[in-house]
Length: 80
Image 1: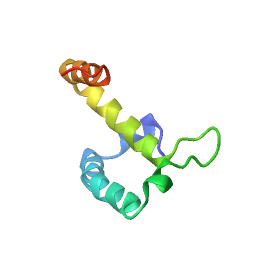
Image 2: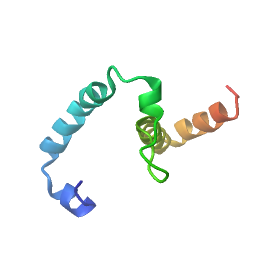
Image 3: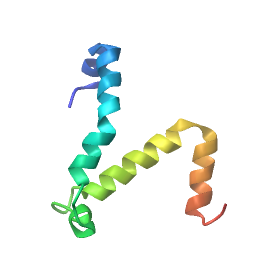
Image 4: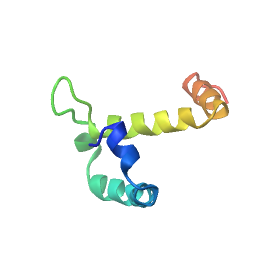
């Protein structure tokens, strides 16, 4: 995994192409896996695949804008 400095040196077109490919790569990685497999932690200090995917999604959603962050808080509190 590149550092932030290394990543910033990658041409934007290459980064955008990688982002375009990410959903398909993710789908292929988890396709056919059971909930038990996706929920299994490899050891006591590392996250399960499901936790990694959900944490990344929540971070991206919350970082999108204040409205999405507010929606996230309401959802977690069971409010509309």
